[in-house]
Image (cartoon, rainbow, N blue to C red; front, side, top):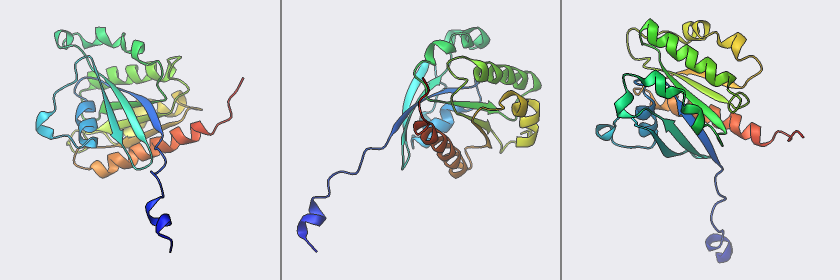
Length: 196
């Protein structure tokens, strides 16, 4: 074997990068999930105020995730700030929507309305969605079938590319698998012929 073949391979090809937006109600677990994916210490996790961007590395891609939070001063009036989320959608190539599957009926209804708004938003409606039903480790957590039915995902998202997966911080491998499915959808989108 030639020495040159061993030492001169060059760097591996760059991984594709995708810009995503992560939305969901306060307390749904967006920050915790993203921080765990980035191998950050759980002790340092605080709710996102405003927005944060995390580069989440995977073997076959890097996801630049823009997580939208709320300013501290409006936590009680978070519904008022959600109307500004759309200002951060531009340039997104995919959407992560995190919901608390163990939340109250009122919060679940609000999450449903926000997801419906996102699925119909002009800047997001053609993008792939990863919907994570978080807190599956809690006794009050609703099943994926209950979430799918309650959120009316089959009729609403018909013709769209979306994935609904259960998750919790206790099973980060399942979370990583869910993100891998989203990466597959993003890669498929890269190979679609452009329409004029």
